[in-house]
Image (cartoon, rainbow, N blue to C red; front, side, top):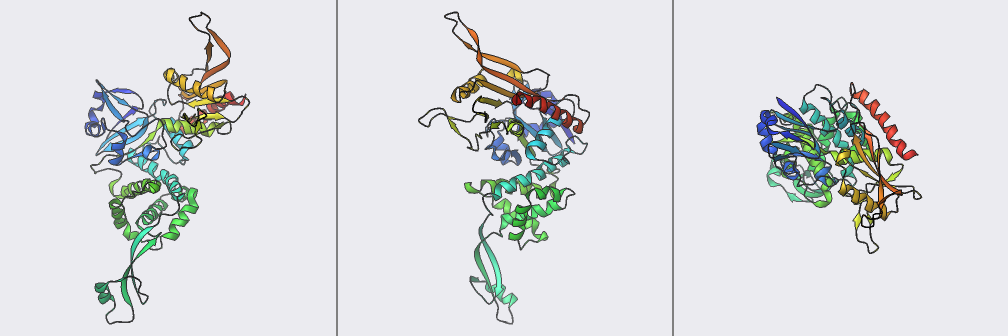
Length: 438
């Protein structure tokens, strides 16, 4: 097994990829949409919830003598080659920061030990398992999936098409029963059976009951709907679902759940790609994780409009034009604050970012704006005061009433282990939150 580790949003010399040449050629200059179709699992689902990445974005792009990574983190594999993309804000050999974001944003259990010496495929498989509750809950909001199924019966209440060959085989000599087939609109179908098989598979894991306890009611509803569940039908159910992917746009959440269940159940046979020729892996949008993590810290102080989800939309102009989605709008209407989460170093926050936040501040009559970013170098908050006047009149001066502040949340660099890292992060969060408590 050959594995290399790189950072997101960085340039790496091409010669460093020589030991994973086949995998590199499979993912090089391919868009995230293409990789999704080839079996890579991308989170947020189908990228629709992510603002900073698009389906056209490439995970690994050739630039002169280097390869450039984008805003995603995760794991990729092909055959015996593995590529791990870590957060650029982590230090050393352990990506504690990425693990911490997953735990805080996606409620992954503490048993997710990305820092252990277990093989990468096992860690990847754990990530898939821990995503299952979130995807099932999202899909079940649409109600239980229902579709037409063809069922076989053998009784005296004929309601469908008589199956002559089965009737002769089962009812000779004739004893008053008729073998027939009936097409019914049912909750007990190929997809709910797939979900049930996944639930039963997760139950076999040491942490399975704890994981499924998060979605106890949804699990119960699936179990009730799949009265015909049989363990020995698992291979047949997987094959049927692979042949019949959910296509209707209304059930897009079920389509993603279907993909996830197939990947989980096939792990038993393929060990997430070991001995299989397809690309496999899971990728996370780093900017989305960072924004949702910040929201978990400041949600009591700020509203959080959701761009891709279409929630909390605001307008610039009175004729209902100029759709905008500030990351954070303070709940305090007297001293309104606009904040923007940036998954980038302080030096990369520049003109385009300034224009955006100042436009939001003008719209909401805010006197103060914040850029909330991961700080890995110990830089203190940096305030920029808006200028007034013009160079033409030679009267440019800094205003006292309007400013934007680059406020970093310090990422620990000296943690001995993940538990120590979490303790240090909580200390950093307290210092960070003092910016809004005052």
